[in-house]
Length: 79
Image 1 (cartoon, rainbow, N blue to C red):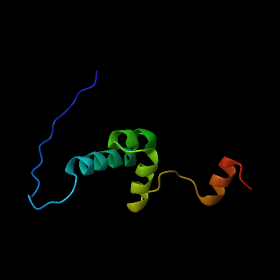
Image 2 (cartoon, helix red, strand yellow):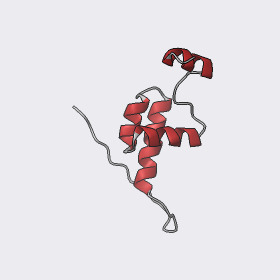
Image 3 (cartoon, one colour):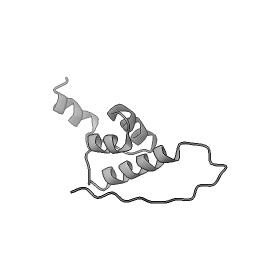
Image 4 (cartoon, rainbow, N blue to C red):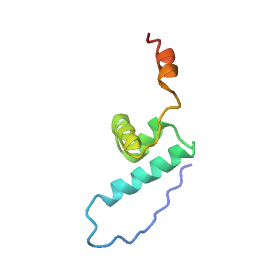
């Protein structure tokens, strides 16, 4: 059974941005970094496409997949 928790956060009135989107994204990134969820599930929790979530990770300097270029080529069987 899933349990939902509501968290209240005060945001300055001068803040410009989508607070809900930013909080969902931060939560998803945190869960991904801690290894609690996969990158795909994190994207779902963030409410974004997998591609957009990968872009967000890249902006933050977070590696989504633990492959270097050679390992990736081998994994994808690219010469």
